[in-house]
Image 1 (cartoon, rainbow, N blue to C red):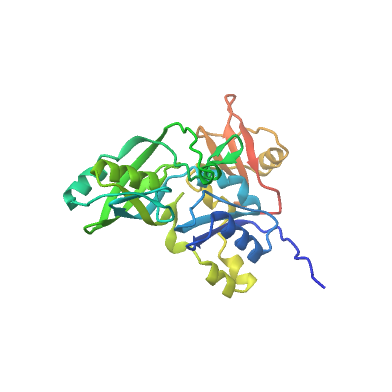
Image 2 (image 1 turned 135 degrees about the vertical axis):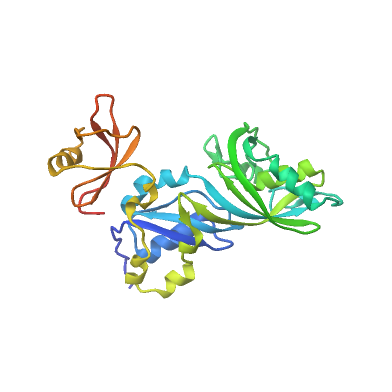
Length: 302
């Protein structure tokens, strides 16, 4: 007889070191299964070729996953010069090859040209959707769908290592940046072509890779040890201003009503807590000076 697993209402953020070869969704489903979690979501896709930091939100934390998805990211990328591929990375078929004759100084100077606000055309082999279907499905059918350039920001590029035909760089960037496309564009600017052969995400939304655990580590743990790895639901929005409400205001806010708070309240999204420092959810300052609820967590389930 096969027993049905009981789904648990468990809340928090798990920092996973996603393994090579796993899609973000495969990693998510594995974590969800290991925790027997009723609800879970990841916070920004990592390609199967990529490894590293993938925050996974469980339960009530899924309500704030978008804040992690929208945050800046940091990656360590390894670029191979002298060849372009269909996918922009090592998984694709080689399209062109050329002789590599570039210096480290040329490479550094070229990387610097990409720092700041730039436009990128998203790759065909991506999860972006056109008429409800991911672009990579069209690409596999041999179709090329027109894509509009998107504005992104490269905060910084640091060259860690440079060899004759490969280099490793650390990139800090805004959401929506395709590192595969950046590698291709750098290769094009150098005149020799390039593609990505390695990618590791090291930071997002203030979370750092050394905090993360691997799937193998999770599998070896007891369920109690796994739960001890979970960060608080509000850790993903720790950068937002915090306000504390008295018991009456907290009660009415949880009923969906806007409430007054004495003193000056910051404009924008706010982390809201009661007097016992229990996280209640997100709110925002209305024009009338009241704090209105925006996204509340379920009481006694956080």
